[in-house]
Every structure is written in structure tokens, then in C-alpha cells.
View 1 (cartoon, rainbow, N blue to C red):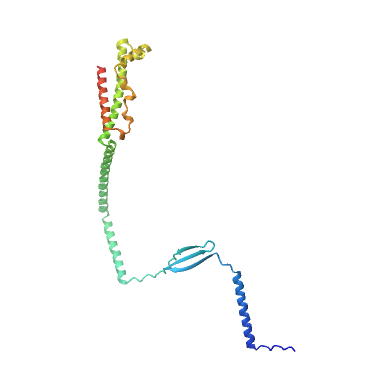
View 2: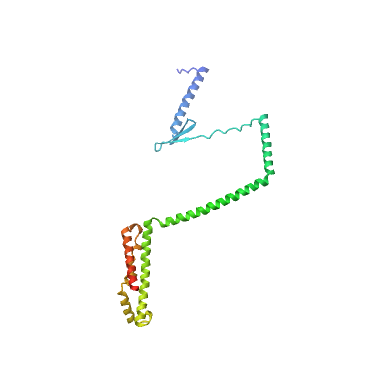
Length: 253
């Protein structure tokens, strides 16, 4: 014999429905969590001393990056201008009147004031012109001293010039002797002589020792850098030049 279940009371039926709904809700939450993908990069934010620290975590490489963001200042509301007091307004009026009176007085004396300013301009312009002239002269003197350098620099420069000068003099003496011997012996210009006679005259001049003074090998000091020239070498060069002057002087007698 089959026994039929007794129907539930309304209260129990309501409680059973609630339990069934809760159980279904738990099942649904569990299913959603299974299907939810945790993002690879997550950010968290916290406020520190008026600034925001953004911490970003990248789960793909387990890397954390922190950024500090300073918020923009809160815009200030335009404050209404305070009402000016009666005393302040009176002072402003008096100040304006005083300035108007002063400017009017200056305008009434404009001719004398302008004349005074014009005189001062001319005086300053003249003073500036004189200072400019003095500055230019001083700059020229300074440039000249810089070019001269030290006494040793001048001594070296003179020795180099002396070498060049004695070489030029020796060349002149050599050409003079060629012409003199040609005229004395052959009564003709050196250019007009035959090659054989020219060799004869040239041989006599070369025996005088002048030809060696005209060669480039005689002047070597000008080729050396200044910082490599010793005082002894300069003195030896000048002695060599002086000896050359004596040789040339004897030849010309």
C-alpha cells in the first residue's frame, strides 16, 4: 500500500525555495569563477602625502613598476576685490593731483630741461669719443706688444732676418763681380759674353767665396721652429752673418 507524502506547510515550502535559490546561487558563482580570467596586469593605487602612487604588476614576467602622480592643484576661486576705504580713495586722489601738478611744472620748464639734457648728451658723447680713442690706441699698443713677444723672440726674429738680408746682399755682390770682371777684362757685359768666357769669369768670381753665401744652405735658421732654437744657435748665426759681411766688404774693395 503506497503512502502519499503530506504537503508542506506554506512556511516550510518558502524556506525550501530559499534554500534551493541559495544553492543555485552558489553553483552559479562557482561556475563564473571557473570561467573568469585573471588579468595579466593589475594596478593598485594609494595616496601618499598628497601624491598618488600607482603600482603596476605584470603577471606575465612578474615585474612591478611604481609611478608617482602629482595631482593638479585645486583651482582657486576668483576672490572678490575688497571695497576700498574712504581714506584710501582720498589718498589716491591726492597722489594723482600731486603728480599732475609736478608734470605740469616740468612741462612749463620744458625748454630749460631739454637744453640741460642736450648739453649733457653732448658732454657724454664727447667723453665716450675720447675714451674710444684711448681704448683704440691702447688696443693697438697691446697688439704690437703681443706681436713682438719677449726679447728672446725679437732676438730670434732679427737673426732670421739677418740671414735673409746677408743672402740678398751676397747675391747682389756676386752679380756685381760678374759684371765688373766682364767689363774690366773683356769690355763687354756678362750677358754678351760667349759661354766659354762666361765660365771663365764665373770661375774667378766663385774663387772669391761669395757664391757660397748666396746658397740656400747658408740660411737655415728660418726653417727651425722657434721653440727649438737655442740661444747659442742664434748667437752662432749672427756671428756667421757678421763674418759674411767682412768677406763681402773685402771683395768689394
